[in-house]
Amino acid sequence: MRDGRAGTSQPGLDPALSKRRQSLQPGIRGDLNEALDRVEGSGLPTALVTTGEGKFYSNGLDLEWLGSASDPGGFMDQLHRLLVRILTFPAVTVAAVNGHAFAAGAMLATAHDFMVMRSDRGYWCLPEVDLGLPPTPTMHALVSARLSHFTLHEAITTGKRYDAVAALAAQIAHKCAPESEVVPTAVALAAELSAKNHDVVATHKQLMYSDVLRMCPG
Image (cartoon, rainbow, N blue to C red; front, side):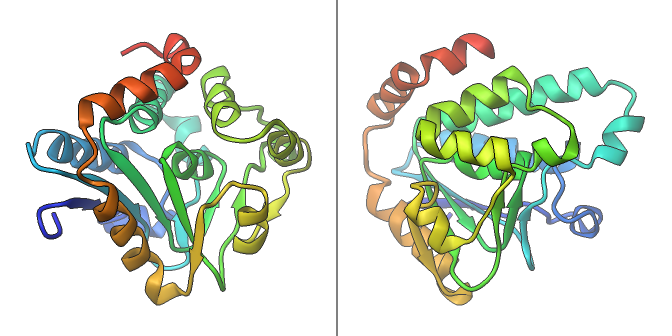
């Protein structure tokens, strides 16, 4: 909590995750869900800010780890539920994108209500076309719901890397800031909007993203 208003969660507190470039493994997924539980259960005017460490916000899935996981399908189901939970969270959410956000990491950032990108370093990218791995239907529905059709088409058919300026122009990001100001800018935005009625915010999001919710219920 910051000033009782904006909750913050930092992906990558586990050193093993940092070594894997902020990949979305079970540990980091659990950290994010715990942060969401804290914010949702605080009973205070709250908002959520997430950020990463170093030059990565999140590099998405660790495909090597996923390939050897005992239950990859179950993990993907849980990841889908996390992304949809953030998309429809009953408080304002802001991604403080301190560096690269790739693949599922880009989707994680995009699931937030607002995105603040570092202006001097880092790309937002959906590289699945180059990896030979199409996104899941739930992931596609999420980015389709958040991006304009023009931007989505360009992003998924080319694997384009958007820096902060390009992301602003494409309406992927909402603000950009120097490295030292990314988190403060995100926290200020979150604090400004933290008093919004959570029940109304939740209802609005459920209506806006009903198609995504139908694909990934509960």
